[in-house]
Every structure is written in C-alpha cells, then in structure tokens.
Image 1 (tube, rainbow, N blue to C red):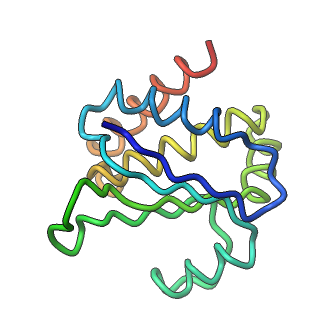
Image 2: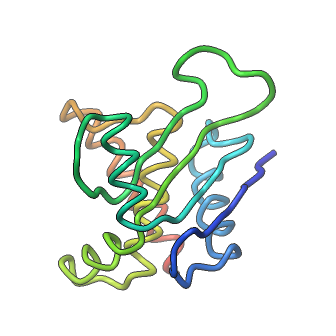
Image 3: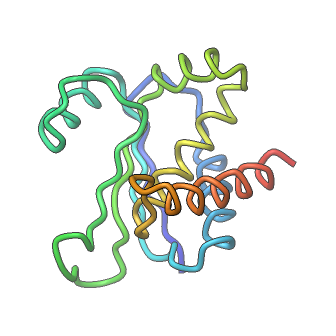
Length: 142
C-alpha cells in the first residue's frame, strides 16, 4: 500500500497527479518504498528554517527527507516526510539544463530513496543510489 499526503505551500505548479506518478514509479523500483509519505512543496524561507533547525545549516537546499523510522519504530505504516524547495528546483533545472519537471522528479525520488535508507556519503553507496534514481527518472520521462 502507498498513501501520499501532498501539500503545496508554494506557488509551484506541480500537480498531485505528477507526485503520485513519481512516487508510484519509485515504489515499483524499490520495494521498501511503501506506506504513508508526506510530500510538501515549500519556498526558500521554510526550507532554510528546516535546514537550520534539523541540520544546523543556515542555507536553502533542494530537498529534505525525514524518515519516521530513524528514531525507532513508529506505529502504523508511516515512511516519512519530504520537503522540496520549488525555487531551488527551478534554479537547478536551469543550471543542469533540464526541465523543471525533470529536476522536481529527480529530487522527489532522491528524497524517497533517503527515506528507505539510501545515502551518498560513501562512494559505493552513492553509486547504487544515483543509478537507481536515474533509472526511475528515465521511466518517468518516457
């Protein structure tokens, strides 16, 4: 089962249907992605405040993921929360010469993979994460 709680606290033109499609594709590629996921699109002020509060970094970032399982077992089938900063996604899309839709999808998948334990601190783990991320993005863009 996959349940997505979507909210858009920014002026982003991202539909709930797009978010559902991206999360569903990711869940088909990585079986650990299941349960309830909260996806919230925010502006720079909110992401910067979250980044400072939870990571000690006073800057805007593209995506933050908070796994509800990190601190121990949560009742039910809760996976976590993902916050995506839409203005940062727009900047990155321009920088990487991709569409905003593609960059948004990439950061959502990136956040989902973090929720289920993927990381990119060590080189071998990073390779696994980014290969799977790009495989999912290719399917989304078809």
